[in-house]
Length: 143
Image (cartoon, rainbow, N blue to C red; front, side):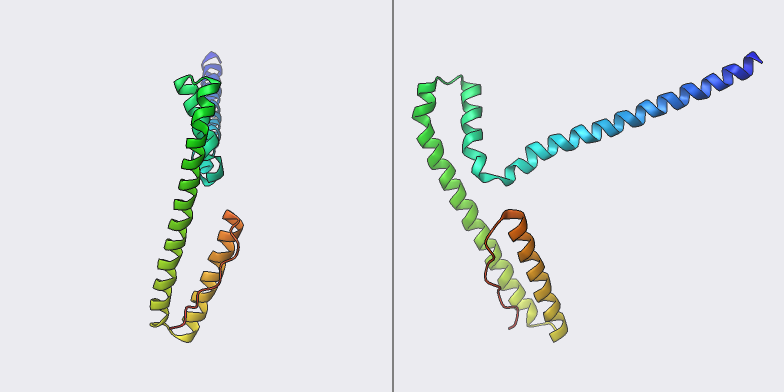
């Protein structure tokens, strides 16, 4: 009977270790996901770049309030320049894709062109929802 009790205890210990392992994996996935969302998806908010730059420089360089006040206009100017670069780059990317769609549309049937227009409209709605951009004029996919 002692052997049977040891066998049951062994299975309980194994089940306990597996439960702790699974709980650790779930916790790690949750913490890792939170970390990734905070650090990677935070980049989706370019309006916060200036504040993050000021906070990081203040902390890492031990800036005095006077120094921070002096460099704030520089950081604000840099933030505005980065915002303009990002906007121009996005516009150029959209133009290149629209041009590619026009060239592709020339090779498609009417039904395929209609589907391409639907894809473009779905993407436009997604961008408007995701990035709060005003709806752009629909580029025509017809040749």
